[in-house]
Amino acid sequence: MQTSSLDSVLPETLARSNKIKRIQTLSLTLLFMAGIVNFLDRGSLSIANQAIRGDLGLSATEFGFLLSAFSLSYGISQLPSGILLDRFGPRVVLGGGLLFWSVMQALAGSVNSFSHFIMLRIGLGIGEAPFMPSGVKVVNDWFNVKNRGLPMGIFNSSTTLGQAFAPPILVALMLAFGWRMMFVIIGVAGIAIALCWYAWYRNRDQISLSAEDTAYLDSGSKPLVQTRLSLREWGSLFKRRSVWGMILGFSGVNYTGWLYLAWLPGYLQAERGLSLANTGWVAAIPFLFGSLGMLVNGVVADKLANKGYSLLRSRKALICFGLVCSAACTLLVIQSSSTAEAVAFISLALFFIHFAGTSAWGLVQIIAPSRMVASVSSIQNFGSFIFASFAPIVTGWVLDTTGSFNWALVVCSCVTFAGALSYFFIVKNPIESAATA
Image 1: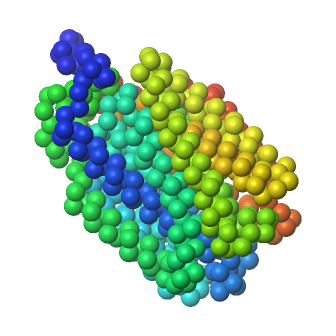
Image 2 (image 1 turned 60 degrees about the vertical axis):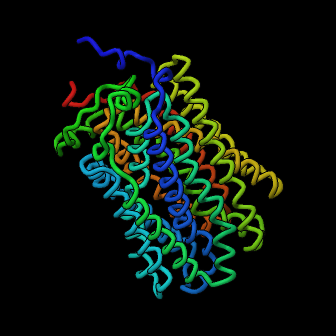
Image 3 (image 1 turned 30 degrees about the horizontal axis):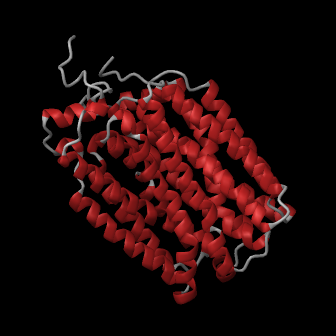
């Protein structure tokens, strides 16, 4: 079948209209703000680690279960969030999720028992589940396939910037108002962003686009199929080898990221003897490096794509490179003789893990048809987060048993390296849509 002249034009020669530029800017800005709040919410429990354990009388292992209650509910809730996004779009699904998780966060300021806190953390995980798949779908819908690396880097960097901002901001709020009021304040901030998202963002099928705009967005990709994803098609994704390869591979990304997010403040205080006030600033450094890794990956991925390298192979190469380097840096943390040296290697570990993670999210957009992007990304996040949920528990148990984080870091390094092997050997072929086959 012949293509129109617009379809045959390379994406870099197709100019974005002002309308598309406005949509892209608004979408990324709102996603970026939501990402900052998202990881302020996630980081709040880790920052308040010592205060909460003191108030509620929790051991390190119990605190690990408290951390994992969020990640398990978050991982399980990925499954329905993906198909909901592919059927109804990010406007309603992300807007509703953002509102719900922010309410759960605000209510955490009123907890008076371990069981009460567990329930609110489960609610937080359910509400946050649509966030990452929503961002992947928004970038997939509003950016050309060869220009998605940097937008994914910007969107993804909000998560580590949120982690970087979290220690100084949350410590300041804790010192000024106490840990309970800290939860309330950031919960209210999330509610405000949820209202802005629903009021201003529109799904692609809700906006009338010109032929030129459609050509820019779809050039280089298979034509967008408008039929909704059926439950049968969704279930068939679990039979795909590449899907399982991404689940196992991304477990290496999430295990490492979740370990440092959950335990870095505790590590700096318990293992390196830093005060709470100093921990707030020092803990921000590695997460800033994580954000830098995301942005660097976005630039490199786009350059490789526009030079004609295979999108699938180049993304896999960047993922494997980042995972292997991160695993090596985590091992070097154990050998560090000073706090500065340990922070330097943790910073490099997070730089490389988020370098890999950004290409992993980009790989979903390449390997899956547009109508399945949210579902595939949520399945990837589901499986990997179920596995990564053991990171806080294992780390807490190791800390209680040995009095040191060293063996927990060894386990982390091994899991990260195994993730690289999974991407290299298991992820092979694109996922074909039944509707376009």
